[in-house]
Image (cartoon, rainbow, N blue to C red; front, top):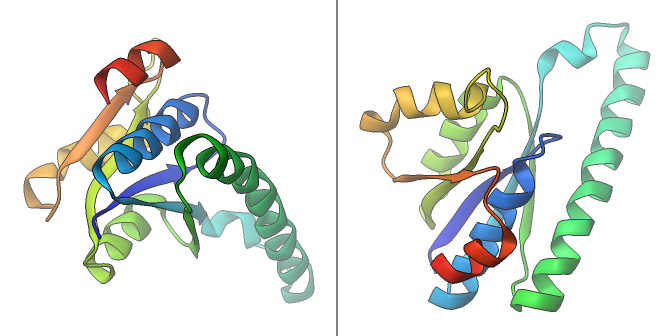
Length: 151
């Protein structure tokens, strides 16, 4: 089964990327893999403190994921998969793509402010020519109704 890989983070545009991935998966018989990456700089403390911070970060991710997962289950009839990795987000995304042959499309949300589409979109579109899968960039300002119409 082809899976849509979508990145879970704290950005506003993450919502549209999640919606798009779930809607496309639902309409094409695919799946959704939600990837959350914990940056390494969050754990530059003593080992005991780092372990507690890592556990807290994972709890936050799981709580955030459950909101999206519930919507995917209830509205799109999709059972998403959560993957949590630690490292530099761009590197972990590329690494995960190379390790999961079922991933067919990377879905990213584009930022809505004047600074540009966001660091992930910028970094990964620069590498898009060497990625083994296409990238879909979903505008952060796109309405839910428009997303439904195009998926």
